[in-house]
Length: 265
Image: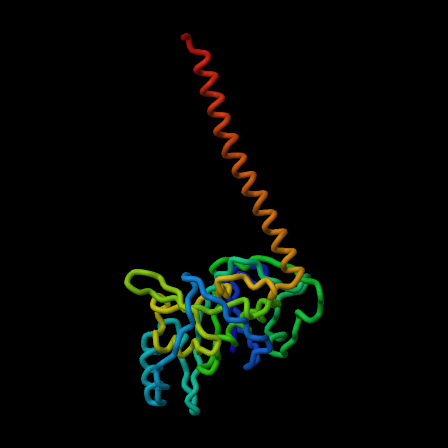
């Protein structure tokens, strides 16, 4: 799986167009989270009920896809029936991510050689990724959602547990924008092939893995301390905003009182 970056952050610029290679494990080393009752606003995983397409059907779909793809990002079919192509992932993370402190961004050489820069230091820091940043990934038809998530985290040297994140598909239906959470075993490139190249029809979004209840046990002590620091700062900002608002009201009321007292009765 290769990555092409197009975003603004401390790691890469808007003008940057890199194609980094990295490899992700095909199995997870994390325990499955306990099943919780989902809130009404939480999307359920997609259930795949369709039969697997035949090789001829895949070839026809790829040919149709490539005729509609206008950005030279077509799909390529291999002799063994697998195929490769590109997907774009929008990053919509509201919380800060944890990364190694004082580490340079991962280079193409580091990715190819599987150099784990995060393991070179125990220091950690947190920052917000730019909202709605976009990552372009070159993946195969066998690449799973789990591998896409792990690959994105590795690219940004994010050391948070991958289970904290989820990949959603965003679709437009009846004039509404809908998000549907994908299973970790789903294969995004197949979904891209079925939907066609138009990102208005289907796009992928990386978000926090909301389960209706925050699993605080999944966070480390430094992460929790950092959250408290961020909340305290936000609290102070809100307090200052409210104080400024009512200071202006008080000032206007005092001016109105002075004007009324100065007028002859």
